[in-house]
Length: 249
Image (tube, rainbow, N blue to C red; front, side, top):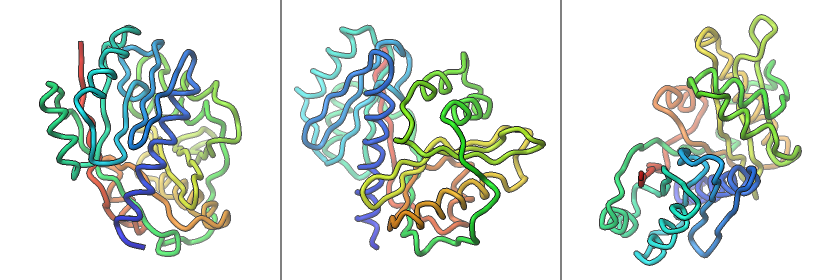
């Protein structure tokens, strides 16, 4: 499976996750058009994670961006963003011309499931969405249980949640979204006191094994600088530079 296929699956899954998080959040709404998906969540006015557009092709005209900006401002959003691939030069120029700025860049990674270094089903097990949110909030210092409050109300059966425990408490987690033939992995996190115990590897092994058992042919994810080494050891490779451009009021 070549990088172009993995890149397309990565971004399609990323957009589907955005639709789940933004479209199903309290008061949330979606805009979908060819090559673009955007979510609007007025109850999270400072979250570019929930209030974001995702470009799926190298095309974003200035009028579309103006309409997005107007809608975000009309519902009181103070911080919103546009996610795009690092190779989308036309999109970058539109964003620059509109005064938006690049605020983060992270590796988008993927692998055919058959190429992953799987060692069988690890000790990680299924979890609930609230647990995944709680561990992420602890791992990344999110105020006000931000992610737990976002994930907890979502309906069961859309996202697959996983956990690995230390001393009887959930310490490392991940979410998986099965979309087409791909398993999109997100919200991988380990609480600080439990790092360097191999728990994230256990979780990733379980996620990948379940994807294999479900007949999926690839798995993709957005990595952090901290997590990239782990994913490479499992068999992932970088297929995209995932950029977030922001507009703040």
